[in-house]
Length: 458
View 1 (tube, rainbow, N blue to C red):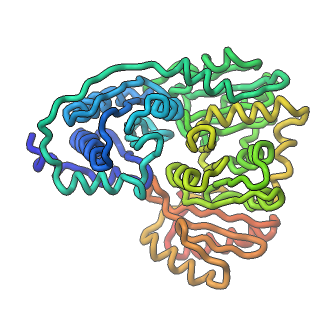
View 2: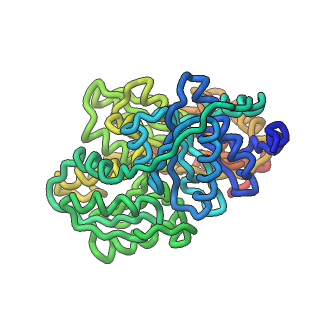
View 3: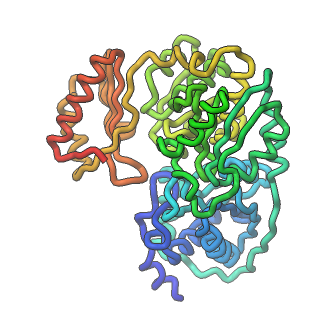
C-alpha cells in the first residue's frame, strides 16, 4: 500500500505523554503500528543511530501479532532486530544495556485491561516521552516517510533471563529469612521470578505465576482493591510479613504489610531513602508525594526534586540530576544502579533487605511516615479541563502556585494538585493536610467547587 495512503490512517490519539497506547485494534490499528515502527527507525537514523533494535513483548495474546508487524517494518528499513521474547520491562531494560542496542520497542499496555495494547520506545535505555522523542517520531511520520532502498536488516534471538536474575540477586543482601508472598497476576514477572527466588534465602509463596495471555486471573492494575484481594488473604492466612503485587509487565509494584494493608508508593520510597540514601544524595518523586518525604530529605541533608507525573519524566530527571532513587505514586520505583530506570523486582528485593535486617514489622517501620492525611488520586469526569484548572487557580491565588503538572497550590498546613491524566480523559485531584480536620474541610471545599463546575466522581 502507498505510504501516503497509509498516512491517512495514522491515529494520533495513541501518542500519550510517555508511551504509545490505545484500544487494539480499534485505536492502535495495524497501519498506525506499522507507521510508528517505521517512524521510530527514521528517528534513530536522524540521531546517527540505527544498527540494532531490541524487540520484546508482554504476555497479552495480541502482542505476538503486533510484534510481527513491528519486526517487519524495522527489518524493511535496514535495522537488525534482536528479539528477547516475552519479558518484563525491567528485563528488557537490562537487555538494552547488555546488548548496547541503539534502541528498543517493548510491546505492552502496562496495567491497562486486555482490550488495550501499546509500545514503549527507547533510545538506548532512555524511555522516550513527548519531551524526548515521541513528538519527533509523530512529526517524521506526518512529514511523509521516505522510501528505503538499502539492505534489509537481520534478525536473531537471545535469552537474557539467566544473566538478569544473577544481576538482580547480586544487588540483594538479605539477613534473616523472611516469609513473603509474590503475586505476578499472570504477567511476565512469573517467567523470571522463580529464577530469582531460588537464589534467595526466603520462605515464599507465588500467586498467579503461570502467564495468562488474557489477563483474566485478576485485575491487571495492582492499585485496584480487587487485584490485592488474594495476596491480602494469603498474608493473613499464612502470617506472611509482606506481599508484593506486580502489574502485567513487571514495572509497577504494590506492597502489602503484615496486616494486608497496602503501603503507598511514596511511603515505600521514604523507606528506601531512609535506609539507602545519605546526605548529599538526590531523590526524585512525582509532585503528588507526601510532605513526609520532603521532611525526611531535609532532616537528612538530601535533595528532593519534584517531577511531572509519568515514569519517563521521572527517569529523565533522574538522569539529568544523577539521582539515587526515584518514585511515582502509581508504583514505579527508580534506581541509579538500575540504569536510572524502574524495576518492581529491584524495589521488592530492597524492601526485603530492609525487613531482613530489622525485627520490626513493616507497618511499624512505615509508622513515622504516616504524619499527614492524604486523599490519593480522586478521579473526576469533567468537560473543559483547562478552564476548570484556570478558575481553580484564581480561587486559590493566595497560595503558592506552580504549574509543573496541572495546578499545585501550597499552604503552610495543606496543599492540593489538580491535573489532567496522561492516559485517560480524567482530571485527578490530590489533597494533603497536617490534620484530619483540615483535610476533610479542604476536601469538601475543593469538591464542592469542582462539582459546581460540572465535575463528577468517576
